[in-house]
Length: 119
Length: 113
Image (tube, rainbow over all chains, first blue to last red; front, side):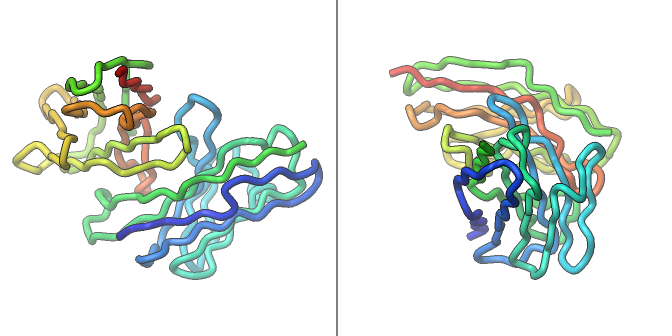
C-alpha cells in the first residue's frame, strides 16, 4: 500500500514550452501533496504544498506563476512548468501524505520523480 | 524551527557487515517524529522507518533499526547485514511547520563486495 506514481518519468523539451507533471496516489487519498526539486547529489528542496481544493502554498523564492500547481482531486496533483528554460532542468519529485490522524507524524510517500531537461 | 544534521557525506561498508548512519536533530517540540528515506540512483525516495519521540522502544523494520537517543537528540539508522542493493543516498527527516519535511543533507552509502 501507499503507492505514489509520477508521470512522465523523464521529459526533454525545448526552451519556451510548458511541461505538465502528474502525481497520483494510487491506493490512498491524500489531502496534502508536496512538490520538491532536487539537484544532483543534494537534498530535496520543497517548492510548494498542495492541498486538495485550495490554492497551493509556495515556498519563498519559488515563482507561483512559473510553477503552476493544481490539486484537483484527493488522488491527483499536477505541476506545470510554464515557459521552461534550461535553468529549470532538474529532478522534480512529489510526495503524498498518508493521514494517520497523528498530524505531524504522518508519513509522506514519494513518487519516483521526473527528470526534466530543457534544451 | 526544526533542523536535521547528517555529518557523513559518504560511507563505505563491506557487504554483510552492519553500518550506522548518523542523524542529529534540533527541535523545540515536545512531540515529534523522525523518518529515514532511501534514495537509490533511480531517484525514487523509499520510506524506510519511522520513530516517534514518545515511542518507548527503538523502531525496527527488517534489517533497519533506529538507535534513538532522545537526550542526545540523535536518531541514527543502523543497517544490518549490508547488501549491494543498499548502496544509495539516505536522508533523515522530520516534520516541521505545516507537516513540511525538513531533510538532512544526506549520506551516500556504498556497499563493497
